Length: 415
Image (tube, rainbow, N blue to C red; front, side, top):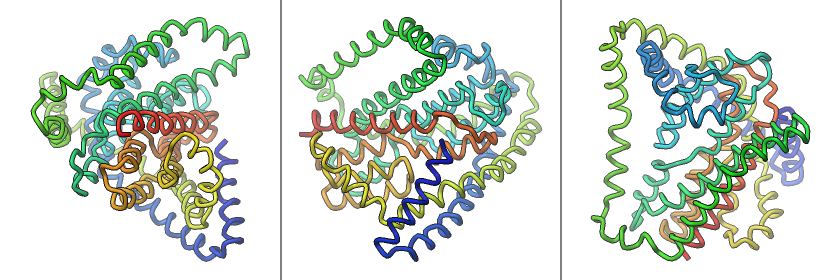
């Protein structure tokens, strides 16, 4: 799959640049992106060294196994191939929790560690396992409880309520996550033939029916302002203060609690930390070729003017669903580049105002979707998996649903 996507991005870039006269721009874009890829990888060394060292301490202290036991009812359904209490479960939970709280710097090392643990269970080392693809789906469409980056941007642009998009982001990212799980399970079922697909449907329809019933109830409650009396009775800026508290204290508390709990278990925390930290440099170097490959293709695509071409093609559809045309470039850019998307959305917030419908929708889209191609390149590159099967389509389907859900909920809440 990545072979065709990579070739598609490069080929479209060259063709569009030939017609628009941007050949020189895509050459510069390719070279700049290659440098950016190396800078990103080198910048990850320190962060990965720190968190992989802390992960090793948590593992030696038995904290990872405890975490795995706590989430076993859910993990056994999502990852049936993984043995009970396997370290991969705890590492995945740490990664997902970091994503929930918007702690991107901590999420990446945890995610790479989880992929390394999953690789130990993978019988075909160059091919992504079902568990790897499910984990990637949960990353590219992670539930976001605290979209810290975009909240900070909104606050900097003097939004009257920077945290107003928390509810819409949670809803949209939840829809994207459910879609990712369904997409991966559907692809797996079809690989096993129609009989496997029917078996999966018969096993899970009750659970999904209950989930969507709860979802409809929540939507109706939001539509008819059931929660309004509760929220109006809360002190002003409660959510803002709570989010600030979480963002400031989560990482320091983790850095304190993990070694403190480990020392009670008689773990030689300094020696264990150094042992785990040694992996940081090696992993960062391993992902450089994968990052260069995907970021160069994305850089060429952006520089060629191909993005404007695709906006023109898709805009009639987005007009039908009530999505402002100004927001479309951000939605298309999000799976490709986080920094590029943030730049587009920041400009939208400056132009239309952070509290406008366009500003609220753009902010929600940033919080509920992920840089799918970057995540796939980093995580699979870290374990040298080349055949990623249907990880990309599952991630892109989830991103699409996340954007559609954002349009739906923002129109309900802000219009």
